[in-house]
Length: 620
Ligand code: GTP
Image (cartoon, rainbow, N blue to C red; front, side, top):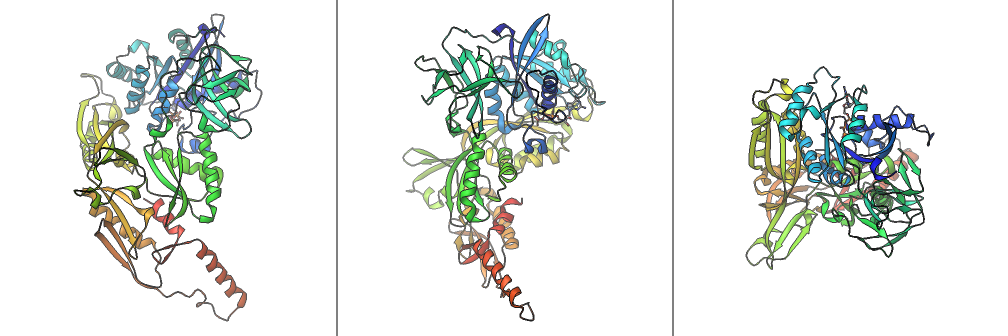
């Protein structure tokens, strides 16, 4: 397959606009006509959304790639679909997948119109210089308004309405036309087979037996089995043991040529060695690395501690986390110890959805029973001497005394994001209130629809495009749910990093019997201190079992107590209620008690069942 007959493309879309359905249709078509692999892959299920969580939540989490053949005017084309994840948390993954493409299908739901993420993914694709094919999906729906949405695409993206292809991924109408447009409009990749080898790693997965399987796009040269290659980033050397295309499952081939996209297995044992955005070259033949390399480190935007409900399960949990993070390189893992919860891991995620997905996979695939501490964003501490450090755990946050004159800390900076919201005018003031409640600043807005544009019903007429700066910490807890409920589901939302900004923040600690419980520490904005303190103390009061003595529950900032409740004392004798002195029964009860003692955590002389932490931290 010379470059001229190769097309590399992605589908980009706002969540739920039908990206997986369209990709799935192509892949099914591919499986039906597939003569190479005869394996029945369950044609009735969405092939691309493989993971159980993805199916349950109906969202694509891990990018998957498939190659297909398409015949046009007697020429057989190789079309490589590079799937991109469809949620805001994964916008960086979208960017790196797009780096392996020359074109993108911009899919917009004809009944919903252009939404916040349609705009952000459009810009990423534009910046990468990709050819954009506008596609309107769901034209089979009675609520579809293709003409209006085509005009929106013109006014928002400057795209020519006559270029817009109308399809229904569900019924299959128009999808063939899209394949033709891919061949006609997207330029072939460029790459010289005689040039030095240059392979761009844009995704990786982990196989228990073969180690790391990388997905690479070959930018120059030809990659063959047995080749010795090296990473531009780590300088580590490998031997290619297997390679081929995804059709849609792995199909081994002799080589991968310039412009091709395929899988490469190469004696890479640790998935930590597969750096997304890395460039590989032939050993002894150095090349200029591709731009777009970002060390995974600085990417996490949400951190949380993960602990086993039963602390004796720590090693098993750690092993499961390690295994799972092999399949998801965007998770950062370090060990940490909490006096309340024992041994655990601190994990960094791309966002809260990513965190939820990871936790669910741990539970589903590894049968783990875990406690996750409240999510926290990374804070930047500016020291008096001008040095800065990042912290990812509230317990590391400076105490008020450290801010005082002579203290070591000059300021704390928090991550902020530039958010965009698209919402029908009717809900505009509710959205403004929401933004202000969450410390929004620099609020700006403009009408979305072009003047004089026809009425598109509630979902699509008189919409407002709002932009607002928000602290990241405000959106990691519950913002999205509120946005949806206060706009009857009509608001769409997206955000991008906007650096760090000074924040008036406090560390709140919770004390049980006058002893701080590290796992419960929170970072709170100065204005929210009282409310947050009262809220959590009340919650602790309801969840913590009464003890044999009186237990004060307090929220504090530095030495100041913000809120307090007191649990009254209780006398407990587990065998007291058993009559007749049935020995075996009594023994069983005592054993049960012993068993549950083992799972208890001693905090300030209080025996706290791990389940109490679970209840506390898992309920909102
Ligand atoms: P993520 O995987 O989360 O990114 O979402 P997505 O954009 O891939 O959307 P998905 O393909 O899961 O489709 C969302 C919903 O729209 C599903 O319920 C689909 O069945 C439905 N849908 C997709 N395409 C069409 C279409 O052409 N017509 C109709 N009526 N429904 C469609």
